[in-house]
Image (tube, rainbow, N blue to C red; front, side, top):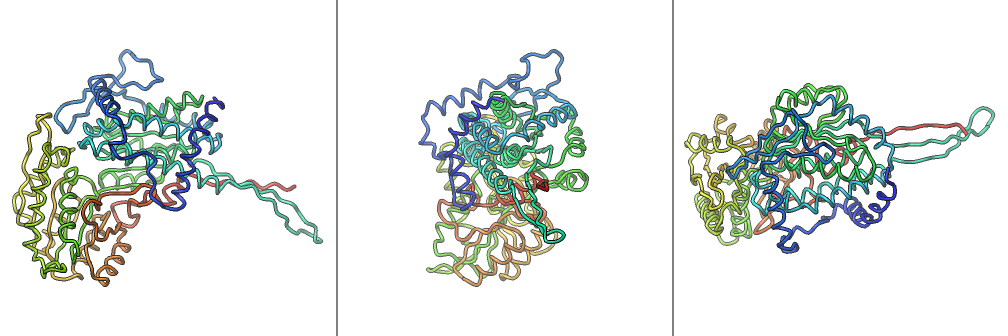
Amino acid sequence: MNIKKINIWRTRHANLLEKAVTAVNSREPFNPFPDDLSFYDKSSIQKGEIQFRQLLGSRFEMEHREKWILNDKRISPEISPYGFPLRISYFVDDFDKLVKKSNHAMKKWEKISINARAAIMCEAITRIHNATFLFSNIGMHTSGHSFFMGFHANAIHAQARALESVANIYNIERGLHKELYSNISIANGVQQHIQRTFKPYPIGLSLIYSGQLVPTWGAYPAIFASLTAGCPVIIIPHSNAILPIALTVRIIKSVFIEAGIPHDIISLFCSENEDAYQAAAIHRSVKLIDYMGGAFFGNWLKQHTLQARVMSQQNAYTSVFVHSVNNYKGMIENLAFGLCSYSAQLCTSPQNIYVLESGIFTPDRIVTPKDFQRDLVKKINYLIKKHPKPRELLGAIASEKTINNIELYSNNNFGQVILHSKRIEDPDFSGARITTPLVISVTSSSEDIRDNYAKEISGPISFIIMKDNLKNVIEELRYSAKNFGILGVGLYTIDDKVENAMRHVSSEIGALLSINFCNNYYISQCSIFTDIHGSACNPSSNIIYGTPDFYNYRLRLTESRKVL
């Protein structure tokens, strides 16, 4: 082990780690890295694009592997949502071999102090940050991000999530590690001295399934929490978003190699047989599974992986109730942007917007549902026309399945289409999947209609749903959360009673409540170190990012007692 190198990193990152721990304890927002593009020089931005172009058509190799191995199996499934294959090939590995290497590496990694582990992981985060604009371009062409969103979701904010995990585990381990001396009375009043030592240990092999839409933002909390806790990590990436995870693994491995620690503590698992990804979950050595993806496989994991604890973030969406508002124009702008940004593909984007049939109360007038619909559609069209390159706002559709959804919901069977979705040609990417939002007005309360919008529908498909009173809105939110899973609720109201009622139901169903978000701070936005993500009490998730359980489950506490 290169103790000198690790000590240099401890000194270098001490201030960063201290600030992160302070933020964890206070829950104050903390941005370890600037998220304003103007902070960075243009040459580094251009360099990131050049580096991405150089990866296209290449054989992706981890630094520790020989560059050319005859007859090795490889896969190259990634296709950019902007319309071209990446043609990057990845080594097909054997899961059993990876497990053996991981468990061997853990024997050394778990013995290293939490101070050293945290320093090593901070160095890894810093190096990932140095590749920010490479990750930004990767986010575009694996997930369909706009460049600016790739800069945020696939780079800067993901890096903050990583540091958040390091700080939390560092904090928890320091609190658990104790040595106590005490006396107990035995026969005839004799005092017996006892030494007790409490020490946290890693729970074991951590298997992580990463998603496509926000692969780094979604996986980094688990990757960096497990590694900092001393757990070996194997990551199974989404087939169309292998590159951001592969690059992450390569950077982390390079840090471990410099530190003189077995780099097999983290591995990437790719296979040409998707059944292997299912078999990996039930491997007897896997003790912890983090999963971000669809409900079908997430539910399978929870039912069949009896040897491991499963923490899942599954299909979810955000509902909004517009009751009354002081800043009507600001509300319209906020909602319209939410329906356009990244084509509303995130689970934090508004999907179902509830409006009372009696209208929306404002200080000037009562806005009818039809006027609200008209104003929202007008603002959506304005925002799209405002961007010379609509991809900068809409991004690209990540999956062809979403295009099929748009076609399905456009046929008026689920309500009245008030804004049709249209395909947009991009001047730079002729094959890009870029579409405008589809907005549907729903007046029917039949169960058949309800069950078509009460679940997550990926992509730029939203519903404006009329209800006759607050009670019916709340009942439908409860139904949707219980049966499908709701991640967040947006609320616009100037009525304290309505606000209190919605606070109660949001807490009950496990949804993050965002009240009166107007203008340029959006319901879909999340402040790292402060805001939580997940519910832990409805089908959308059984764990919450940013809360103690997410970190504690990676550790076990041991105790030894010694009579002195």
